[in-house]
Image 1 (cartoon, chains in turn yellow, red):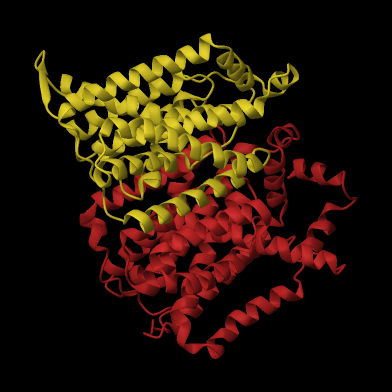
Image 2 (cartoon, chains in turn cyan, blue; image 1 turned 90 degrees about the vertical axis):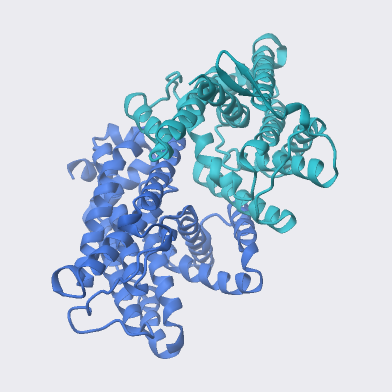
Length: 286
Length: 344
């Protein structure tokens, strides 16, 4: 019981780190970036290459995954995404779907279509018994790291000047611009950080899921649910919804394996019926 | 209907004449359909490919109704396609090739009813929320149906697919031959009939009210269009169309695999529509032809990297060629000072 809760929390936190960038970019620019999962996949494959091919430590691959995907995100944002902010949602969906297809095929070309397995460093292998629950070191590591990141993000958002500018831009872009805030610069930075976090999440997820080229498509629905249930105006919303989803998904697959796959969709449907604006979302004019 | 009259009266004195004028047939349309029939003699060995194109075109057409005219961005039309395929497949399989159940036309009706019913139920979810939630819901419904198809393997055959689909001869007269000639004609006729219905639908006051909703939801509601009801109707019709497309695939290939429910199919159909041009009806047909031609050229060289070219084409299309092929053609026509044909 506790073990499942624990695994669920680890999974949920991971989902949050994966999806938070998407939530902010969506809230900020009203841009639907389905290709967010492609950045996560990039992070995952960076880990695979560094650990399995180059023999570097798993710990080094985490910051590398963050930095490389953040750089990738920043360059794509400046060259391609920036042209699509004023287009309609259909165009954005098609564009990001196109990016997904390209990234899937490209990864297939360079890395092969089969699943990649990353071996954990010995320090993170093994389990510990605590209050009758069996806790994997790696899951503990993920929980601690993701919690620190979440706290860090929240602090940046609430305490720093950049954070208040960001929040102002999310709340009302036009007024923020009028106040002299350089929204497009903030957006570029946020996009880069969001992509970087997705990359880091992908790297962290690789030992769990064994990454393969279809990753962006497989997890697209999870990201969408996290965002749609959590709303895009805060990061607490997606945080709670990611936790809920993680715990429900893990518990569902453990207790009722026959219908476990349907649990998250059931949540999705129920939320939509009773709270169409998202479980934690505010009702805004948007 | 009264609301609509009010809507168009501002623009012209007589909305009826205007609608009728818009709905008139133009020569390129005749040409396209005649060409489709002429293919029987032009390229008798490629029936299977043509049949596939027709089915894809019908699926894309179903998306055009929902997306092009009502503005609902959907990633899950494959769910209805698959439901239709399994319905028709199961009916043909358990009907043992005899009249009531194995009859292909009744199979189409059954598929339309089942897919339309599920579409009707899920439309209430689609109504809620923004484009993002619509994406999530359409995708989610598709994934649920896919998962069901996989889990209910005693009905669907699971990963092995549904075998032994034996539809009776069409109208009791024309058997499905191995060359696929009758299959192609059958699919083409179905597409033509459904196309006519769709064409009438979008040129009717109902279709105009949908476009009003797509253009501006708040204003559409303000002038008295029952937005929710209209969206439910068109989403249900779109689902039924997709179901019929799936049924055609099941009957003409006499096999149903889990692949009919895949996300790729929904995405492909969406791409076809965008290639061809959204909101034109003919875009779906022309897009399907272009898509298959592109597939033939690019995928025959490197089938596993087809996705890359597809993605690239999409990105370029969004950045540079909004409106797809129909948009380009309309622009060309405009340049030559002719009336636009695609604006159906």
